[in-house]
Image 1 (tube, rainbow, N blue to C red):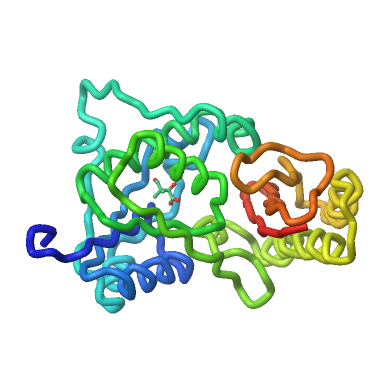
Image 2 (image 1 turned 60 degrees about the horizontal axis):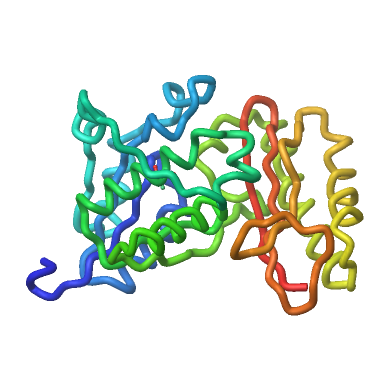
Length: 267
Ligand code: PAF
């Protein structure tokens, strides 16, 4: 297809598809001649204490959805095909992986960059589509593409949210009815930050403490981090500067389910 001059769009996923994934598919279909979706629950991005075995899977449902979306190819590599017996090569992006998710999940990004590079090599896409919800993952992948001079353009797609603001995630299925309500605190706290910043607040410690207050009345919520970082470097900042872009990011456990969310703002 490449020889025939067609552009290849690629949406890598771990399956259990939701509207967030489908929006990536639709972006790809709009931009590219051919759309390839992969489903591979990648063991190397989960630590031994995480939910690799329990990660939701429903291949039959996913295949039907992708077929009805008009996806051209579904790539389903096996674990053995990707990580053969003597596998020993990993990709490690140095700095942007260190803070936030990298602090709480130290081996996570090495697993992500390794699988994404392998998938890029197998599929050879012209464009690859990723969701803004995993903001740090996106920054890490962009850094890898830049550093390794990969011939693929990374396309960022906006977060898709439920009506009450909860960012779509395959892990939302773990939430009980009460936890599902509690989980709206993530989006509410991001809105609090946005409102404070639009009304002129620049002091990060004040913004974070106002956000933090919202979680104190929710007994199922346990914050991993709430941070504001410079948008390109992911460096944590104390004070917001005019005309610069920042991410406000949160990672929080609601019961046993770990959720992340973010917004991009300019001060
Ligand atoms: O974002 C995800 O679903 C995964 O991290 C990815 C990019 C498919 C790699 O396994």
